[in-house]
Length: 372
Ligand code: IPM
Ligand code: MG
Image (cartoon, rainbow, N blue to C red; front, top):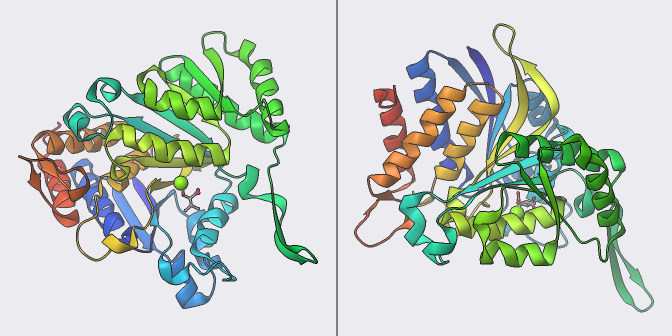
């Protein structure tokens, strides 16, 4: 197969972790006879410095012409002035919106070999295997009005949480369908005791439930969900929730997988791309859930696994290469089982390696074809 992959390294550790994921994809291409062509473009602070905008048109065009997008991370202290006209994060929001990527899948799985690295009790986290389906192009992030202004009694600011029935329906459908492919349990998370958008969300979920009789639907208030995620995380299968709640809950959930450096994500929409033969892949953008960690940048320290696992999701969802995706995931598990660790998941008795070495270990094993 031939595929065009847009690579947007971004800022901070972004370029380092994407380089390792590209290395792994190249190894997959060689091993399984695919031609992956990588096209690079700027986003975030790097794009602001060069073009004065966080998402240049050329970057968006490149993504639209590609089968999938691999992104590192954006942001850094040099662009953090609250008065700034443009911010790196604007680029991330604009690309999600511009590409119609309304569903953000964040799988959280505890690998047995990392159970003791977790901050939480091994007993609580050992069976964690859940996916958060986060709505990505609505809610507080995009609602209008959104502004700050001066009044005679000081400054005021407003953000708007808005959702249409259509936006809620398509993300809930994604949640139901995913639950159907997994353990048939869907937790819809809202704040229906306070928010009108949440009441619409809950009504819609109840209306759709009869279409999925094989899925057990439960509703949970977001504050309670934050608590249950720590108390008994293994009971969750699929969690579906709106943008801001999903943002917060997934940072929390990353603790359940040992480190932020372990969690990949896939942002999908309704667009597809024709692949070789009669197959169609879902167009998507793949990025680690962690940020640009500017203090760790340029030191060959960052854990590239979240980005490598994001590349595995890219293979699975956008290129329909399931066997290849599984091979990448298995190699990551095997490398960890063999005792290799980056600093964020380091434990006594293990072998600490840097960003590059971790990428080399995974790609070398793929080239050697240890899974086939
Ligand atoms: C994430 C990040 C982003 C978000 C930031 C960087 C804008 O936290 O992908 O979770 O809030 O969506
Ligand atoms: Mg976040």
